[in-house]
Image 1 (cartoon, one colour):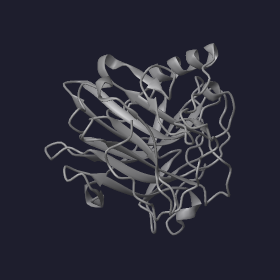
Image 2 (cartoon, one colour):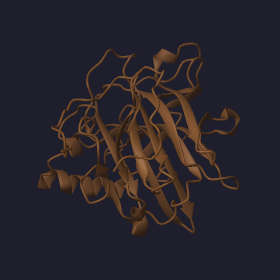
Image 3 (tube, helix red, strand yellow):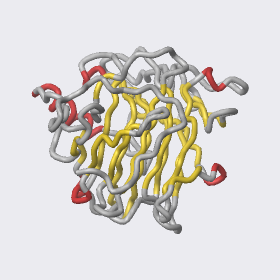
Length: 300
């Protein structure tokens, strides 16, 4: 399938993550080894819930927009800097954009971004990823289980991101509901090129976000090791007052409301989320929406 909405050309520079070019009529699907599937199932059960922001052994820094009491959101777009980090095999560090809702203690959400997770991906590189939590508490990474429908033959929902100079390495993504089909699409935002619809999560996977979501957000997350040691977040440095480039950054957020058009977020309505200022920081940016990150450690 193709989305019914138009994919505009982006004016914001991002680092393309295309590393695959499948023949026409085919799409890239990551080969699922038994170890990869088992690890993915474990991390899906342990995955941080951005709607409740409650998860044992997890720290986070970011912003969230809660639309309860207002018209639902139908998508968002955001741009996040990408950084290499030293993350041990029993730790995880990532940055994500997400949309979702909680209704009667039932959570549905979708997220995408970049992740360093040696136990899941088998190495310490930066990988793109997608994740959903849907009906009956089901949750899944990438194309591990039936769920995400890969459409692009060049841009995969998950794969190692190309290297680039620190400070100029970014990804841009949208998560957007196609109002005609009800499916939730993820799109790679390109610089001065047509953006690429990667694929979609069918509406049938969800039970509370069929008509939009009431929460969206963006930021960094880490999962600590069993010993309690926390990995670095962002680029491993805390934000500084006058230098946006000192830490990881989120350029901006666009929100799609009932008009089905992307609009700049009302910054005054954003909620700051930072659970451990001993190891991580969150600060309003100068040229960027906000900056985040930190060194981690054993006292977070």
